[in-house]
Picture 1: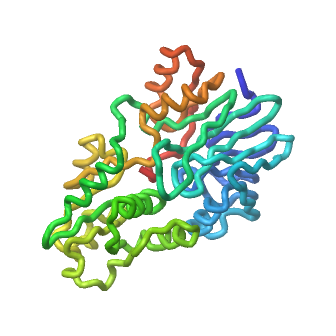
Picture 2: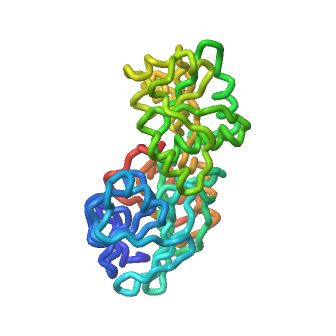
Picture 3: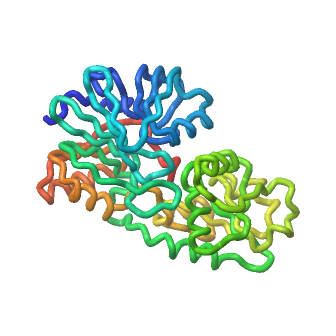
Length: 331
């Protein structure tokens, strides 16, 4: 087996010669963090290596994310204990997200974390990195998941506005909310976008880190009539709670790759399912594996069986990793 020095355990990926972990599910003495979503980034570590943006996101979410936080720029290589080299490359998932290239004993392993291949105005695009082992997510690792162009979904969102009504969009606080706003701006919508209070701090941080979101305002204290025809963003949990009653006859929408599944849309009780994902879809997953063409592909947190089968049919060596603690907080 290739890369025996990288040990998949239930709590995460252990880089044995360095005494380090990638995205550990529990506090670790040395952690390499791919991005700031809570199923990958946790507080309480001794030392953390991550991009400056991810460290800022972790500080906002967890206070002090580690006793010592070390920012790593894209393309920068750091040497860990045991002589392991780690280089961070863009993953295209959310602001600050990174693939981590690990080099040891003449082998190259890329841990993609979560990634997507579609353009996103809020973060640098994914960069394919040659390697011996590619560790890929499989969140949408089924052929049914083929995400439509985001321009069409944004057009549907804009068309849903009507007299006497607003559009209330459920979007996760890190990544999805900011991407929806940025895509609205790219589509030529420059009216204020209104926010639930739970989204305000992360949107402000994005702006501080150089992502221009335009005019965003809090809903709190605004008369109902002033929100007619407006676009309002909230956490998914607020779509149908008492908070939403202050809005003028909202059209409820949800921005997620899971909106491809009708049952998920019904469970959310949304009028307008928007298939907007920050993960690679089936075609992007398979195209990425083919492009990188690793000697082995390790598959984690998602529909592992289907992607394993595709690898088998295309004569590619692959295995599934039994990791825990990953969810769809970000999609």
